[in-house]
Length: 483
Image 1 (tube, rainbow, N blue to C red):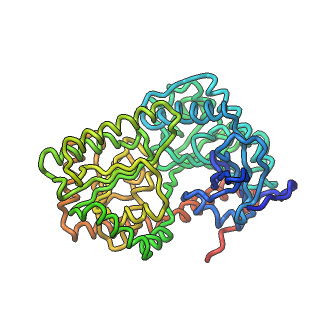
Image 2 (image 1 turned 90 degrees about the vertical axis):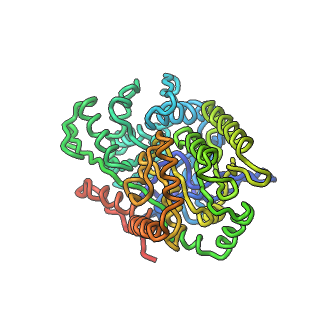
Image 3 (image 1 turned 60 degrees about the horizontal axis):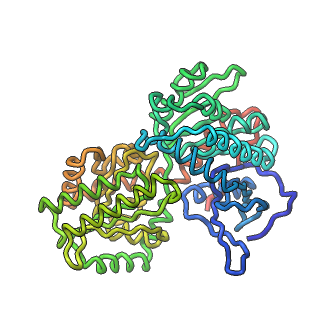
């Protein structure tokens, strides 16, 4: 890490997201270092950022108020500070206690608190000011996700010269749910500050345009919104993806192949390994999934001698009450299932409440015969695509919720309704008993899809549409250099 000059050059491309693409690490001597976050977003955007002297604005993850902009591995990073109260009200409160459940079909009940909203407005303005300060004349600013929905309009007011894009990584709800929000108009007007508003699925884009017409009163036609000042806003679906090539290379590496064999041996070489990998979140459908699997064991359709379900549940938002309750519920369920159905050395479910490096996840994807991805609602769900990327021999089976964005592309998966436990059980058995030729045909088709639409393709397609949004008044972004 190197500190930058306070008079750092302005950026032609600015990325704004809730978090920086690096994690803050405090060393034993009290000094601070930064470690690159394992995320697809930075993989996609790094080449185009380097080509355009880009800068990334985000929260450092801590409450240190005096972090200066710095350069890490050639990337210009601009930390935005949050106080402990703002972490509680903006991040844990409005972002994850109000918007997250509302945008995920009200799987949990959203809370509406005026002080949370006030904090959301304050923090969004701080991010918008950082972007206005960082961006060069006529630069491109790409704002990301539900925590930043007011930034586009705030930034447009400060810097009308900018080209502004916004992408929502989570679902966007239908009008019946969205209009519960007391600040529904303010959020819609916030998003309308962008030239292009991107979503994971076409239905989300249609929901947005319909709401703008109904609630804000602007004229719309298909995916276009026409504002009174003559500006247009284009909405559209841009399904995000993963670094397919990088993940497949990792899966093919000798250490990962060896680790995959070790995992099977540590599980006593069962005939079938089923795998779930999720953040511990109530939208992921973990409880119903494990319950359904336990019924297959109890009914004798599977046995603990032949099969094991490995569930990785990465810790998430542990200061939020709903997440603590969910963790306790899952802990009790796993204990009860293993107590009732397990044998010595043969648990029905191998439960891991921890996070793991990419190498270990790739090894798990290689070891698993059946991947079970059953969210109640998900913007995309990249785990499904990661499993497919790691199955370079075109084997294995994917059981996938039709309510994940990935279901639009991975149509050869065994698609299920996660609320229908009997249907889920039938699809798991269908995947286990499928003819290997059928599995290979399905996997080849899914691998072709994700290879043709990887994360770099996603980023370049969004930026291309954004660059064409107002071509008369803006500089064109330089494309990332081909390597």
